[in-house]
Length: 313
Image 1 (cartoon, one colour):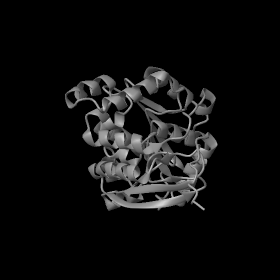
Image 2: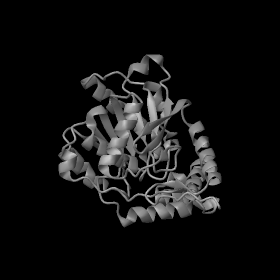
Image 3: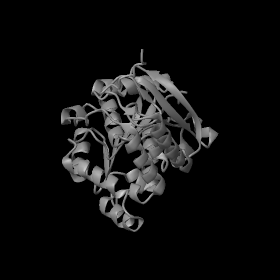
Image 4: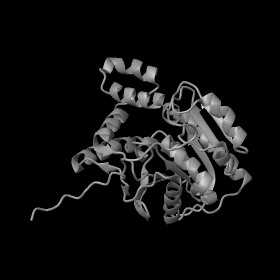
């Protein structure tokens, strides 16, 4: 009898084929090489699949005992997106970057985890498997929703949360999806057009060749299978007691920055909120030196007020 082909689950993200996956990995490796040296990689098991984890620094052995940073990337990407940030962060603290199951990284998803309770369980299990009991959690875009959700539902391991132009504050509107598709098409524009398109769309992907190649490879290689996250209500946000820092791009199309600049500190006790000018959805990519310094300063302030527990694994 002919061999049966395994069915692809409709609720699980997956690669189209091995060849496209490997091309995407190769493009991501170029970005990783532009950031801090990776000290080690490992896979940890959770109820939702295998999570691939990258470990960086610190470069100063004396900083090994400091509260570590955990990075959660945005939708449609992987930990490679943190290449502008890993050198600065890992110079001062241990850094762990997690590939989110359901996105095109090296993690392998087995069960859906887009539901808030499941997403929080996944992250808690991953941090537990890494031996991390006290961390500064940083998330961008969809990863921003994941870290806000964690602070709401399972804050026990969190020293602080930094959300970079995050999902989870407002319903994802049509303008954001139009911007995503326009940005993708702009990556194929003639080279002479790209600087103007990048400025118009606030999209650094268009003018950074390595980023452009990586994004294009990911779109071809991977199929995401999850809905956009629902925004947290004022009551849900108001339950957060973890030190909280919100950084948004002035021309963000995912959130209304001025609206959230007023709202978040009002509903989350002690929260900081800031708008970075001359950027849209990627402040940590457009202005890495500024954002890295602000994040590290925030973490330093948190640690000085509440001495950290051990750094874990």
